[in-house]
Amino acid sequence: MMNRLPKAGTLEIAPSILSADFASLASEIAQVTAQGIQVVHLDVMDGHFVPNITIGPPVVKWIRQCTDAVLDTHLMITDPEKYAPEFIKAGSDHITFHIETVDDPAVFIDELRSQGVTVGVTLNPETPVKSIEAVARLCDMVLVMTVHPGFGGQSFIDEAAQKCRQVRQIVGPGVRIEVDGGIDATTVATAKNYGADTFVAGNAIFGQKDRAAAITAIRQAMKG
Ligand code: DX5
Ligand code: ZN
Image 1 (cartoon, rainbow, N blue to C red):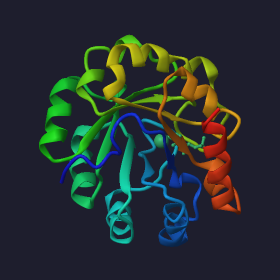
Image 2: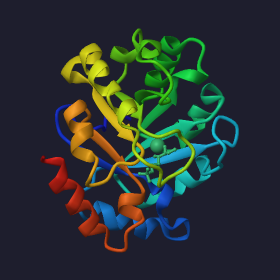
Image 3: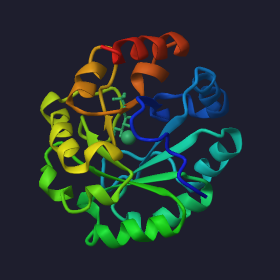
Image 4: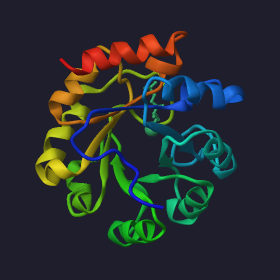
C-alpha cells in the first residue's frame, strides 16, 4: 500500500456512508465516485466510545471490492490499537483514531504507518487542541470533529470548527485538515475559511435524493 490521500492543498469532499442505504452500498458509492469524488469516509462505531454501532472489517472488505476510492476510516472505538489492523487488512487506505483513546499516540502512528496506511488523529469538540499538539505533525491528516460523534445529521458546532485555525498553525500547509459533522452548502465555506481542506458530508449528500446535485451545491459553496 502507499499514500493514497489526495496531495495536500486540494479541497476534497469525503461523503460519509453513514447516511447511505447500507443494503445498496455498491451503487450508493458509485453514485458519488461518478461525480469525481476520490475519498469515501467510513464511520466505525463500537457502542462504547460512542452510543451507536455501525460497521466492522467485513463490511469494509466488501466495500473495497466495489470501489477504488480512498477509504478514509474513522474509528470511533475504545480500542483502536486492537482493531485497526483488521481494518487495514480489509482494505482501509487511511485510519483516523481519537486522541482520547490511545495512551502513546506517537507509537501508534508509527505502527499504523508500518502497516502501509496514512494516519489521522481526531479530537472531540470538547477536547482541546493541546491534546494533539505533540503528534499532529506526525499525521497526514487531522480531523476536527464539528459535532459530538455518534450520529449523522447533527448541527455544525462553529466553536469546534474554529479549532482548525490553531491546528493549521501547528501543522502548516503539508497536513490535511478534515472537518466532520454538520457540513453542507451553508457551513462548508466557514470551515474552509478556518483552514479545513477535507469536508466530510453524510446527510448533505446521502440524505438527498439527487447526489450529483448535492455534491455540486457543496462544491459551489466551497469556493466561497
Ligand atoms: C459523526 C460521524 C460523521 C457523520 C457526519 O459521528 O463521524 O462522519 O457521518 O454526518 P453529517 O454530515 O450528517 O453530520
Ligand atoms: Zn466521521
